Image (cartoon, rainbow over all chains, first blue to last red; front, side, top):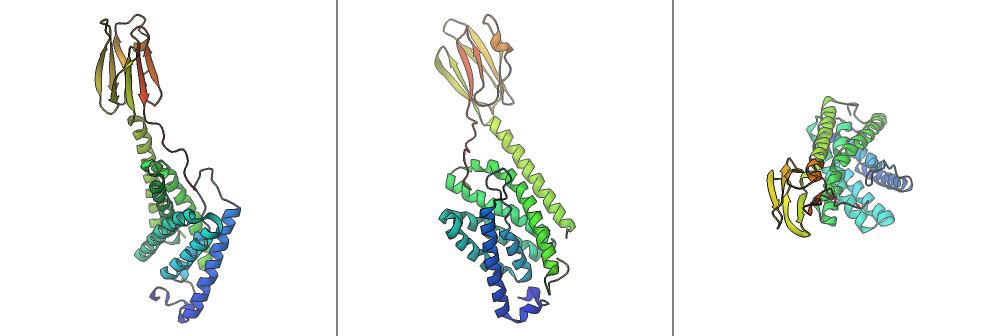
Length: 177
Length: 121
């Protein structure tokens, strides 16, 4: 909570919870949009991850705990609605690793939103490839690693720039993001 | 929107990805094995990782000398007529072969096939 004391909304926990609820439903809608219109770059497993946009904004506008809660709600509901139990496991691995990385990098204060998002994008892909390695039972799935790292950098940068533009326009957010 | 650290991070990750792809493609070729068949039966299997020279002798006294160097397999000497095997290009990838018909010798690269057919989305 201390991370954004200059945020006028931080005075009211109720308002923050309400915002988190709105963000969770927005993330869910973004997940649905991505199911309807897959932003596919010709390689399986590569997604733009627009739901991650909401998570990053939650991380900066609220804090890491809210971002985690929004993420979990989104993953379980989207998983049950669109992809099934395996989808939930894949998403969980990617999103938790990604969020943990983003929280830690944000705390260093060295990186901007874009850098944090890039690291998050790469770690999201890494988490999924780790689960894939366990499921398929072979380390050979790591042949996809280079493609996923580079795509993670690109999608992470796109999401990060959008998040940056949105955060600047949100009332009460810091200008240095 | 961008800090210096962001760009450094992106560059480091991309370099890491490219380095990993280089290592993977490198490992694929060297991960294979050489299978030598002489006169219809298996003579032996050899790793391409070790540089070595193998002399394959037939029952009637003929020979082919097989050389493995830097993962490339070639026949560097033979007493067969024709010398087609000696003039064959070096082989290194799974499925490639060198054949010496007079001495009934078959060199075949095995393994190294890509084990990923499908990856779950």
